[in-house]
Every structure is written in structure tokens, then in C-alpha cells.
View (spheres, rainbow, N blue to C red):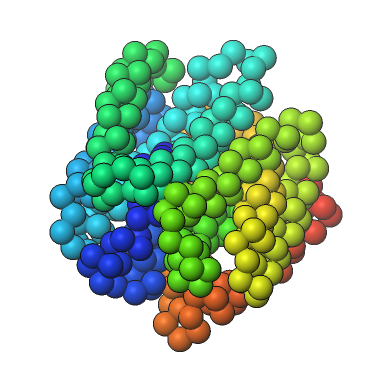
Length: 374
């Protein structure tokens, strides 16, 4: 998952080298999210039919190809192809890897397994900008070395994945592989709807930090150190992981609404940082918002995976991630379009004005109608 956010601190360098606007940055980011959604919709249940390990190996291979595209980058076309392949990879990994972790764990450790899966997802997303930011700032070949390191990590991941036991029993004859679209079994819908709403709100904030915050940090705050950009983005995802670790103490019923309301507070702090143009306030917003996102995200994932039938778990989790990645892409592209007329600062304020009532409304709704699983 680190590879999906690896280019985040590098967008400014690509802007200088190729020459494009902040809108194109958000479109490049959205291409990745579209790849994720397409993979989830087309192949969301493939790991239920083919097995977890073959799908994971294929996804890792796509991630290698994505890194190769960035290594050979000479213009926007390869950037788009690289991001699209990265999205396909993440879409396949999101459902299959989460399901595999849950199935490899003994029943008495199901809660820890759910945390491990979601923490690896958010932790990987946070480590990508941290790794590339430091390498680009303090090592040679700023647009090459991060992807060479990533390929080395992927080779190690491929070796480990090949050694994993398969958790899906083969069916004879094997059902045909067909695009399933959004698969939400009827018995999961009561838990799925509030979980999806919470995921949408939380991923909207993460999209802002991965696609728009680097431009704001450099263009508005005047901070051009790429390592600082990586640390700011990492702080949101690291805080998300901390929030996930707290869910077990809080419980799903309370964690979902509480997480949404903490997320609302974090987004309000981010809006304040735009008004006063302060990097410390922006970091505070990232930490508070990430904490709320993580708390709500793990609770949402736990509630959905707990009620999903075994034979449709991969497909159900994939549908959950579809909702999340719609939240991470559409609002961010809107911000990019607004920058053309309003500039980064005011576009960010409009974004905050939309997300704050959304996340607050979801939190209040969940307080009144909490999920039935705990």
C-alpha cells in the first residue's frame, strides 16, 4: 500500500519538470482512485473464487509495473498509466489481503487480526510519502530512487506471499469469473450502510492530505522541504493507525459516531490552518482528523467483516472499499477544479465547508442509530 502514496511529495517536482496545474495533480490522483474502484467492482470477489494468494501475487506484480512506469516517466501519459496500475493493485489488495489476514488468524484473535489488516492499510499509505519525501530531499535521483526502493520491497513481499498458506478451498467446478459490481449481501446491509457513510467521510479527509496538502504546504506556506511534506501526510495516516488501536477499548457502537465527530473537529482545525496559514495548525488538524478517521474506519471494517458470510467476505469488503475510494477521489477532484478560479487556500476552505457538515451529520446519525454489532 505504500506504493500508492509514494508520489505524493513528488508532485511538485513533476509540476516543475512537466508543467501542469494543481487540477492535473488531483486528476492524476483521481486516476488512481478510479483504478481502485474499477478493480473492486470487476474483481472484488475473484479472491473468493481463485484463492487469496494468486490474487495477492498478481496485485503485487501490478505494483511493480506501476513503479517501472514512474522510473521511465517522460510526461503525463506514463504518470497516468502508473497511477492506474497502482489503483488496480490497491483495489485487488484491499479486499483480498484483508480477508486473508482475518482468515489466517485463529478465532480468538479475530479482533487483533482486523486491527492488523486496517493498520497495515493505513500504515502503508502513510509510509509511502514519508519514504519518498526523505529520499527525494536527502538522497540522489529524487524521481527515481523512491521507486527503486519500492521495487526492492515488493520483491520481498512477493517472496513472503508465495510462502503463505491458502485460506480458500478450491471449488470443483470453479464458478466463472464475472464482474460482480457492488456485492452487499442482504444480511450485511444494516451494518454496511453506516459503515460506508463513515468510511466516505474519513477518506475524504485522507484524499485532501494525499492530493492537495503538498501543494498548499509549498505554494501557500512556502515550505519546500519534501521531507516535511512527507511527515505532514504521514502524521494523518499514523494518527489513523493510533485511532484504530483505540477501537477495541471503545467498542464498535461508540467508535463509529465518536470517530466521525472527532473527524469533524480535525477538519475544522484544518480549515483554521488555511485561514491563518499555519503549518503547526495544519499538522494538528492532520493528527486530530486522522485519529477520528482511524477510530471510525476500524469500527466500520469490523462491523462489516463480522456480519459478512464467509463465501462472500472478500466481495463484501471490496464493496466497502468502493465506498471509501469514492470518498477519497470525487471531493478531491472538485478541490482541484476550484483551484483554477479560487486558488488553493480558498478551494480548501470550500472543501472543509462541505466535509464538516457531512461528517458531523454522519456522526449524529450514528449516535441515534448505532450499528447492531459490537
